[in-house]
Each structure stands twice: as C-alpha cells, then as structure tokens.
Image: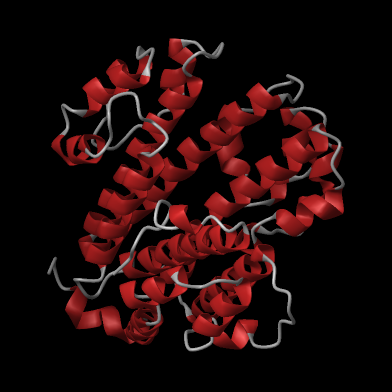
Length: 351
C-alpha cells in the first residue's frame, strides 16, 4: 500500500476496479488452451469458445469460419469492455483509459499512410484498423503527401497532435520515413503517458511506471535489431529511444552502437531482469525474442492485479486481452493450415 489510496479510491474507482477484476476472471486458462490445441477445425474452436466470454460474439457466425472472423469477434469483446469502462469512468481515470488507446491510433495512422503509399484501397485499409484507435478524420489520411501535410490536414485535431512536434518535416513519405515517424510518435507517447502516471502518484505511479519502462526498453531492443543493416545512423537510432526505463541512459549508448544480435545480447546481459529473457534464446536466435518478451510482459501484467486501489489493472487487463487475441489468432491459423505440430510455439499462457 502506498499512501492513503484506500481512503478515497473506491468513491470513484471502486465500481470499475471490481468490473475489471471480473473481466479478468473471464480470461482463458491453461485448461482452455489445452482444449483449443486439440481442435481439428475452426468450428471446433468456436465450440470450445462457446462456454467462454467469447461465446455470445461467435454464436451467430455461420460455417465455414475464417481466422479473421474469430480475431474480429475477440477484438470486439475487448472494445466493448473498454467502451463500457470509459463511459463509466470519471477523471483522472477517463484520461488514463484514453491514453491506452493512443498506441492503437499511432498504429492506425501508420497503417493507412503505408497502405496509401503502396496504392491500397482506403476502405480496405480502414477495415484492418484497430477499433480502439479510430478517430473521425482517419479516412482523410490518404491525401497527405508528406509529414507536414499529414499534421496540418488531419492530425492537428487528434490527441496525437502534441507528439508530432518532433517529427514534422517536408520530406516525402517513404517506408523508411514512415517507420521513423512511428517510432518517434511512440517515443513521445510513452514519455507523455509516463509523466501522466507519475503525476497520479501512489501505487498507480509505481506499477505503471514499471510497466511503461519495460515497454520502452523492449521498443529500444526492437528498434536496434530492426535497424541493423539499414541506413539508419547511430545518432538517429539513439533519438528513437525513450528517455526513461532501466536501459536509460547507459544501455541506450551501448545499444546505439550494436551491429548484430549477439552484441545486443551482450548489452542486455548486464541487466538482470533482461538477462533471464535472453537466457531462453540460443546465440543468434532473434526470432523467438518477441515471444520471450511477451511472456515476461504477461508475468508483469498479472502481478499488477496483486494490489488494489490503482489504475494499472485497467492497462493490464487491456494488454492481457490483446495477448489472448494473439494466442487465438495463432491457434486458429495453425488449425486452419493443418500445422498442429507448431501450435504451442506461438502461445503465451496467461494463467
């Protein structure tokens, strides 16, 4: 317990904390995943999910089912839960919940801009956007030719506007610039969210700052690995790292000069929380890194529920639902493609 949260938290936050803990009880268990891994078809998957929170969402779907339908319905469950909490929330919880959706907004902006660059149909792209990251003027993103236009015509009226100050330029949009834009926006977003959580204080600040620091460190590792062998300079790479986290600042200095995966591993081995993640991987094996990070994140998110009277449970629940959706997408794809031998490779168990 940190301070006096217990005295006043339940006045505004008690009902919603009870709701989110109830939602969390509906997450799939290891037994559910064992049953799903035995499925022979997507209709079997639907039958097993009928007894879970996803049952009502899949009940009226006709056969044959597609993986995209299952993922869409799982996402709809998450969106309905989020919207219910948002409509019931008062300040500062409502602002906290809105912050959670900004990451999806950034992903949607990048998806539309990249798709337009490759001459994809805007309506097709809008269908692929995450519902949590939708905003009124998103369809008009397709008209922008450079970052300055993107900001002036569309994003100036969205919550992302303050994050664009660092990456506005007249450069034409290409794949490299768009990826730099995504990471610059994410950096500004995470730093802003971190400052907001610090202002909230108490258990929320302690737990959320830890979760956001982990997210910032993971993004730093991803940026480093993805930029190896590209034209991104070391200084440019360093500018994309968030200014907080366990790796800040000395780990960032070392990551900025890494030229291969084993050098990244050598840097991360100096930090005990991350040493255990990299210990699961063989040398040179970077493809399993995402799963190792997801497993560590799930463990930290579950620990957020061990305490009461804080907002981190809302962030943790949304993230755990997203992980569950990824698990179900992987299971559905393996079943649909008859690749059941690989089904356990992509599942991150939550309980």
